[in-house]
Length: 490
Image (cartoon, rainbow, N blue to C red; front, side, top):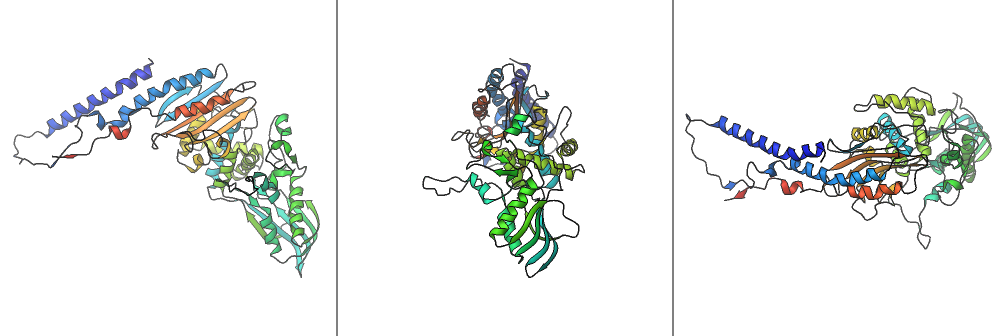
């Protein structure tokens, strides 16, 4: 038996002895020989004796529950083998597991937890990014003598109907099945409708795509294989359909082809939609709007909370990288990947309860295999947000939403797990919060990362049964059973 287990077993009798001694001292102090006190008859009696263990339920329940889950934790750690790994599990301030908690490891998509946490803190849950359309010239009888500037505001999910159709789910009769958790796209068609509503029927100049809010670096510091696999579209402050020029009927990255010039492609898409609405366009190009141009239309993105929910639940690499560049701009850095990383470190350092010592941040999505993270930091991040926070609730939901929708279906974990997955050739990770199916007031925060030159196929598969074992916590008499009984009538 470990020292920690021995200490936990001694806690209940020690606490009981303390309660008994305190009660005796209080009774002794209340004695008085000089005051005559009339006897008072009570109609009810205590349902639980004053010194009953039921009067300290949480103190008695916790050691039993903590000990009961230890074999499952130890078995999971053993099955990780010699891979560099870390595991932290915490409940109500008590650490149930601490294995390599301060070892810096490649976090894969658990990196998105940092990006979305900072974005939510910096901008707030209701913040929206605005994509604007400016006219530079004079309009007479519906004819704009000049250019129309399409100015990117860094909306990561500005899309056309053709792109959104990839995510449609239909039944056998081709009827659309409404999703339980709709994705939060912005509609380029809506922006085209707003332009048409101004009365413009012809643009003699061009539709000009403007991406000046961010730099024009299209990729992060990623391995060539990940870029070739289309793990992210080309980054830009103005991109439609995440910067992809074509795609298949399903959201499979391998079927997509990147645009060589995202702001120009965005201008092409807007010009096409304007043409469908009877507006003639002289051409398309890319450039920067002049100060003389004035706004004639605009569209807002989804709220920040909706954006981070899509990024976290569906592990959107493109969305995370765009948010990182926004963090750079908001933090007084450049709208670049490196500027965003520097601003993110500063924001995390300024957050109470967090220390970035030992962290290495190269991107916002976790595609970079040069990122380094610790399980201790990720768990502290979850605790800083809080188990019932908007941030934690933005994560994938076991059995229901995002990358965990296919896991834990129809188990006790279904609907009770909020977590971020992570997968690379060199890393597998899972961090989040499990609300105990046995007691909704009990939340287990956890973080797990394992690295290898090439992660074994069976290693990610260990996560699902382990989480379902954690869902047996607390395996101990319930608080309701241990609480003092109600007074009984005599």
